[in-house]
Image (cartoon, rainbow, N blue to C red; front, side, top):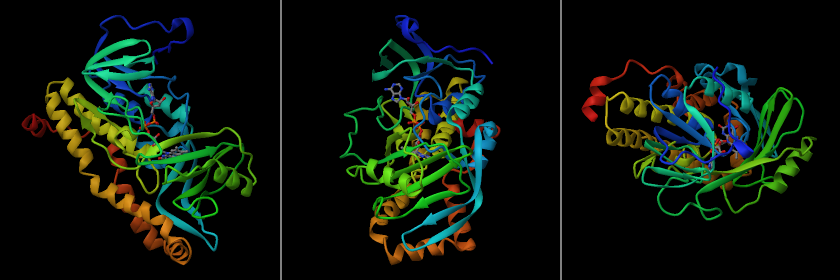
Length: 378
Ligand SMILES: Cc1cc2nc3c(=O)[nH]c(=O)nc-3n(C[C@H](O)[C@H](O)[C@H](O)COP(=O)(O)OP(=O)(O)OC[C@H]3O[C@@H](n4cnc5c(N)ncnc54)[C@H](O)[C@@H]3O)c2cc1C
């Protein structure tokens, strides 16, 4: 594997004036690394930028469907695998059997494994904004014919003013990472912690990831997170948190491709955004690859990718509606619902449909390039 040293301190020099690339991918987490992976062997000059080194900053409980991780060749990052969810309300506990499994994984290891599958170059730089196809960073400007914003909820390369909490359509999540072991992926639907949201404890071999997410950006989650950690007798240490967009935003805008949280690709009801960041990152990367090898124009890629993302709108809208109803269901309706999903047939039916929103087959190598259809669309 080639050594790609990131720049720190005195090494953090300015980019050469007029530095130009074929593709600049801003953000080196799930979405950005997935885009870069799809451009391997394209022969293009691809630069990935992030303010931190790859894998340095985890902002997630890092649980994803196992098949996604396996199909992407990321098995070595898996820490623990779960065939069910253990769901608590104040009145009852039910085990929801899954038709597939979730795995928790190690974030630095997963990022390293994804990065090994790309042949892009990487630089640490804070992205400040964009003018046309020029990206402004704290190390100077870089330009590219193809720009990707995989920077998360701030959508730094977008047009107009940034969305700002607490008014924006954002959820918020905070978790602690104490040492510890557990057998189950656990969820709490309990107003003592949060009404519009849920609490969780995700074991990852020798660590627990315990947190609370709020669908209402005005509600603080620190006190509930501390309460949940105390209730499960875990130490409240190593805090991680972030905002999570809960509405889709245009995935192609003003000549820029957006993937992952920057396009609102996190599923609103569950706040599951890793699988979808990978899914839309792969879709974006495949469109860019078709531009780089001359099969379509940039305009065609923007249109096709924008439409692909938008074609998922109804599923995101349904999940958003369900998210908004959570706070109204506590009590008997919630207990009944949680019990219903304890039935194998119900849970399997629902979770199969849920996985289909971003199916793991998308992580497999691209099928033979649909040259005719892409060329026709160009
Ligand atoms: C507490 C919490 C727990 C979660 N748990 C799960 C979970 O278990 N499973 C799941 O599927 N989803 C989970 N999510 C949601 C998930 O983390 C996100 O949806 C996912 O990380 C989105 O991936 P991304 O690549 O789009 O963005 P991010 O992972 O946010 O990556 C953005 C990247 O851009 C970089 N960046 C940001 N701004 C700049 C800048 N100005 N200049 C340079 N670089 C910049 C960041 O350093 C980062 O590397 C959780 C979220 C939270 C908050």
